[in-house]
Amino acid sequence: MSYKYPVYQPYLGGNEKKYVGECLDSTWISSKGKFIQKFEDNFSAFTGIKNSVAVANGTVALHVALLALGIGKNDEVIVPTFTYIASVNAIYYTGAKPVFVDSDEDTWQIDTNKIEEKISQKTKAIMAVHIYGHPCEMDKIIKIARKHKIFVVEDCAEAIGTYYKGKHVGTMGEISTFSFFGNKTITTGEGGMVCTNDDKIADLSTRIKGQGLAKDQEYFHDIIGYNYRMTNICAAIGCAQLEKIDDILLKKRNVAQCYIDNLQSIPIEYHKEIENVKHSYWMFTILVASENERTKLRSYLKKNGIETRPTFHPVHTMPMYNTGEKFNIAENLGSRGINLPSYPDLSEADIKFITGKIKEFYE
Ligand SMILES: Cc1ncc(COP(=O)(O)O)c(C=O)c1O
Image (cartoon, rainbow, N blue to C red; front, side, top):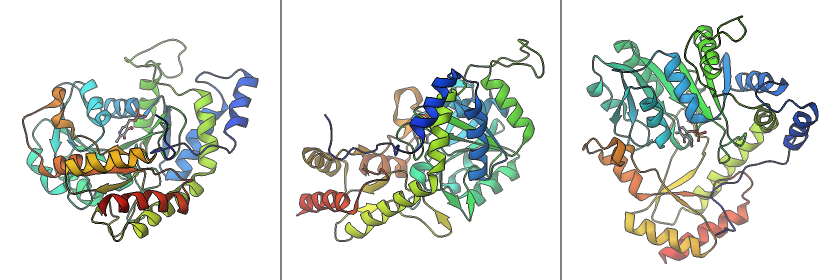
């Protein structure tokens, strides 16, 4: 079914076509070419993280990040259960065990008061996932990590343009990752980035993504690596997207503000920005009273041409990762949330139409 208002659509229409054309004309269509380095450099300039390593998608970015920290078999990684499955899958790929933590009721991010009780002798890292574009409580996470001498990996797949106390997310842990899937704030089609201020970790990440190639030796490989490279074509799209990032982020903030203004009289909650942070509103998300009400509202909106998505099912409820544990906040968020259309060029009139239909449902 095609919707009048999809949940997301990429914001193209800049230099994307021109730069992709340059790749085709020059025949540099694989993972070598001028756009890769340019995209990495421009990405670092935007986030303020010293090194950026472009990869094929946000999932492999996490895999590379964990491997570059030496995480593997017999290790444990703390992760919020209320996240997209990729965060947890990447931990599993390394042979490490994901250890789940519940979410904070206000921010929907990992509950920092519940991390320490999950730390064991085997814990090597905390994965801080900035879900839906709101940052985690990074000061507390870093403090816990320093105390226990473990790493912090920031999964910023949904959080380009998100700031915590003035710092861009991804700048506070040892390593961080981003996704450029088609529904992300900036896209390369499929794509991801591994970022770190540590040159050695950056170097290792580059080697892991490129079949473990030894430094300065042709076709000699001294570690086991992967082909996780990004293509020049994807990087070309990324360069064009980065040229518009400020505009995209501003439009998305305006979309969120317009939803907030128009939802005032409706009995629902929404994902709020707390003090001292900047929410990039990757997805504007509301919470309704119950799962049953969610099903009914979503089908009412669907009938009116409005696509929505349910919030993520907490990962511990999925068969591969079911630990038999109960995480009340995550389960609550996963059963009552709805992502509304959140793309940058939604107009005020579009949002008035969407919120008008939500009002109609409650009347
Ligand atoms: C929190 C989170 N982590 C990781 C990923 C994985 O990114 P990708 O889809 O580019 O592999 C996503 C993507 O949707 C995500 O939302």
